[in-house]
Image (cartoon, rainbow, N blue to C red; front, side):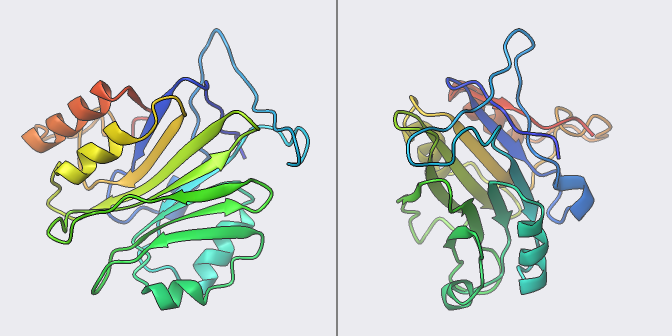
Length: 227
């Protein structure tokens, strides 16, 4: 499994190409590197000493069943970002998560839902982010993961219902989180653009252009491998 590494000052986002992605296609670990400087993440304090780079896995599961959850956890990633759990809060709470802490946001009603799982050897906590009830476009859960005593990584798992909209809630998500911490924004945004779909035949919509501009202005860097 290829490790995920990042530079501490950087912020990244990783959109899925389609609403439902093939498991093999999206289980690779996210990777963002600088050719001149690759930094391995070393943890200290009361966390396991020098476990190596953090591995992150993302997937739109289109219904988080116990078997899918077990398969995801078996990949050995340190952090798992999930979209479209299709589970209520009660159903999420009853799931066996083994060596992981599960943070989830369920949709009120049918479908949707997002989650982040963090290995218990990493200290983590949820960052509250309130989405107004009238904003039915965005679903997100945000988690802060301690890298060491002085550094944190912020991980967000997001889902945008089709057709996607760049709402005020999404703007708050990318602009209001601490800029001093690395941010990994994993999401199924239901958007298409040549940056991650090089063979896209249609022109990107204005919404996609607005989305990319907002992410760029917030200092986010795309880590998808095109195609």
